[in-house]
Length: 132
Image (cartoon, rainbow, N blue to C red; front, side, top):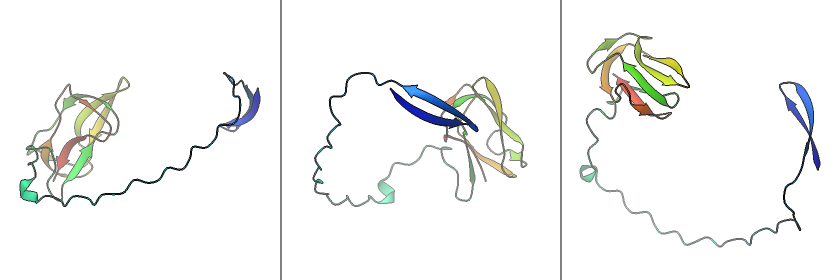
């Protein structure tokens, strides 16, 4: 058994932890691996040969992207492309952990792209909308 002293929110707790399984000896460090030779990176392809992005998937230069703050499901989308919005207008509602979270416009502008629809599942950081 090993004893530890843990502080949680200003309260001090003394806990005992039992090791499970037998440890014959301390683990020996692995031998240092020799680094593999690094091949030079391939030259980037010309921009013209790159696949074009799907329409409405990214914002325009100078636009503000609104991303999902957490994973969840889109309950409703209150705007469409071309709509004028004011700062703090509710753009869509994201349900996460059985709570409805209003996603609001960070600034006034025009909706440039809407990348989600009602019922869509999103991950944290996924782009929801873009305002120009």
